[in-house]
Length: 160
Image (cartoon, rainbow, N blue to C red; front, side, top):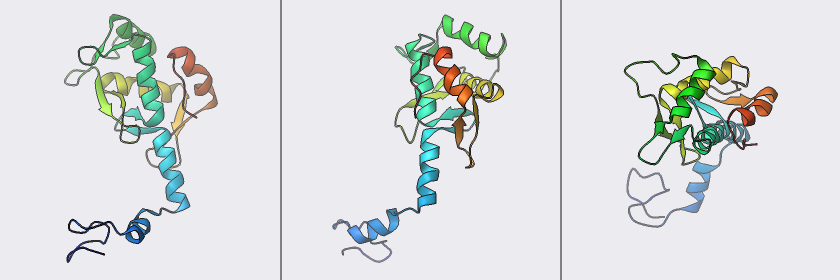
């Protein structure tokens, strides 16, 4: 194995990667592997939804022409009405924060919705009982009622 002092054996100083050291560092426990899968499926990212669920919701909002992505991310007029119907006419009125922002999802490597609209959507789904906190600190689970209601709310293919 190559590597100078202070290296972890995984990456040497320009030399080959030691497969045994890499496997020892990368071999998670079953518990850690399941927790990672729950976080990848659905989780909160600050105050908005992320993971496969967050990305699916973002895609559904774009497909339903509620979000426009052509010249940066923006709510369409239909999107403003949709959010007002979801959470009230003043739902997006928070000042000092963008109404919409794309947030790159670290598990999906695609965007989910952040900003005021992302927080409003997340809160509305919790309030309706369509998502609930999971076993892990940030994980979220889609409930049976959420699984049946969300496709009608946003034309979205839900992750398993």
